[in-house]
Length: 361
Image: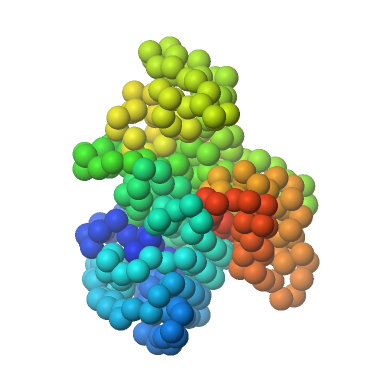
């Protein structure tokens, strides 16, 4: 392995704390030679109405926008893997985050009804020239605060990778399951409020392992046809409703929304300690071989999917991502989010596009 690029979401909307993460333990993630963060920024231009921070490297380009000008202090924190810059959490909140990574792009937009952004993402990409490319991607949608989404974005990928290191190829689904459950158990020990829905994509040896807990969703373009890789976990889903009722809980409809114990509108996720008996962290997982007709995968929070259908999302992205010399997946992500906003979405929205062509074996 000659090079690795890791995007670690340590920002006021991506970092749960100033805590130093543990090193990754994996047979396919060696010691990287560099780390880039969405906040590895050194040049800033301040305007009266906003502060824009632009970061670029050979593999990662990020734009972070602020509503009000503010003096930015970005300490460099050693991770044992390299360096990551962190913006103090008391800075004014970000409205948008744009990330152009190695084989993926992300666009996050704060919803109109939100005080603080509660969506998060994470990405770990192995660029080794002489090895099978490996990667982990995740989108996390917090509720009741951002703590659970922060924690999942920081820890779930590492926990899954560590579990993969302990198992053979046949144990990938169990590795992902244990990664989710371990992350949930670790978060519950913090006695923190709130929870988070999760959708993740692990790529290994030409296989795509997609998992979810909650209503974040993964959709793949297979030759231009949208293929849902996950099924939303909602209390209205018949099997989920029956599971909750077997465990002594109840599901009712409040203002046209089905909720557990009259409270939560999702039935699986990280955290939610008060409802943990019914809101489990166990993911559902789908494994498939990445074939030439597998074009890209969209990971997105429900703020997008409540307003845009699976096929609409694929149709909008393809002209920017498939069959063109100058691919513009970040532009496509922004247009996708903007479409949901114009249709009335007031929720936080995160859309990540993963180009699958580089992982075909």
